[in-house]
Image 1 (tube, helix red, strand yellow):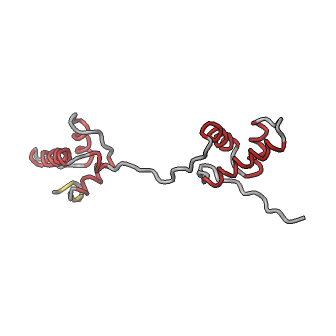
Image 2: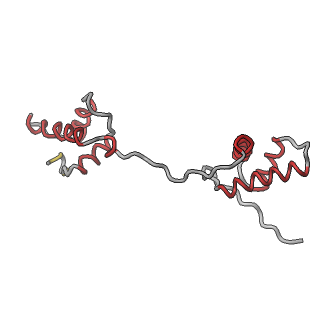
Amino acid sequence: MANVSPTTKNPMGKPISSSQRIMIVNAYKMELRKNPDLTVRDARIYISKLLGVGQRTVSNVISEYNSKKTVTSPCKNRIKASFKEKFDDMQMNAVRFHVHSFWLNKTIPTLDKILTAVNNDETLPEISRTNLYRMLKFMDFVYGNYFVA
């Protein structure tokens, strides 16, 4: 008898590849051919132990295959919108105006003051403190206990 290595479990949260999905479908078909009276639940438990993939993943792949007659590969890289796409040039100029208005009112423009002024302006979209800091750095403002143009 040949030495069989133990199955390694797929880490939780890690997506399974399309080749693993095809292996799940092939194992499901093989088990149905061997035992036509097998329930989906029993097949799911057996395939999960056999391949080291979670039962819910096996169930999702089988139901996807039964409905679409194909399996899809996971989308590994997410397209994330940057704060630069959220603000156009006119809106960046409005933020710049808010910073300069603090200097005109003879108050020091701290990040918190700029954030409240920008978020209170209805013409501008909401922005987080971190993204506001990044945007001010992008607009070449320099931080030295307060923002300087």
